[in-house]
Every structure is written in structure tokens, then in C-alpha cells.
Length: 120
Image (cartoon, rainbow, N blue to C red):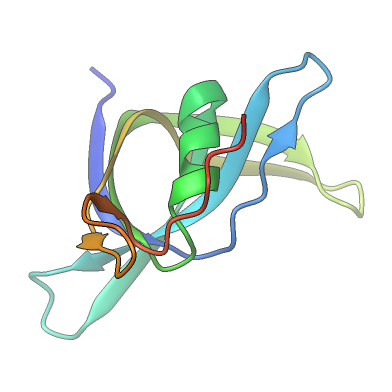
């Protein structure tokens, strides 16, 4: 079984990309605290979101926003800019849930932190 559940904060501004196949992808890093360590420690875990999940996070969750994700661990090989072969471990997200929800001043309904309009 390959199943990972994490809660953390997005480390970078979202950059939604379109692959050559036309699929939407979003790569970011999730900062996950280690609550049981003697010192405050944080793991920085690369995450990958595809299609609707990528679009949702890009439009609604900003850098620093806290989310819960469920996904699977994937090891991927790639060549860096110097031509060296590298391997990266990343979580491919199956489900994403915003954690920080607030009520905005100009709206009576609950919306994600610092919302942006969803592009149509």
C-alpha cells in the first residue's frame, strides 16, 4: 500500500503549468511540522497536483496556506541543468482539503483565506 496523509503549509507561490499533453500541473512544497521532536523541526515535502486539484489550489490557496493532502509517494528521475541525473521523492496528491478557512469582511459566507476569483 502506498498512501500518505500530510497537513502543512505551502512554501511557494503557486505556478499553474500546462504540459505538452494539455494537462494542468502544479508543483509546490509542503512544510510539515514534526510535533513530537525535542526541537522544532519541519520537513519540506515536494507535492504534485494535477488537473482540477491543481486548478483549485492555484486559485484558492496562497503561499503559507495550510492544507491537508492524501496521496502516494513517487520517485522520479530527471536530468538537472548540468546534465546530471537526479532522483526526487514527491507526493502525488489524490485529495486536497483547505484547513484555514476565514470569513472575509465583504462576504457573509466562509471562503478560503485571501480568496481569489476562480478563473472560468
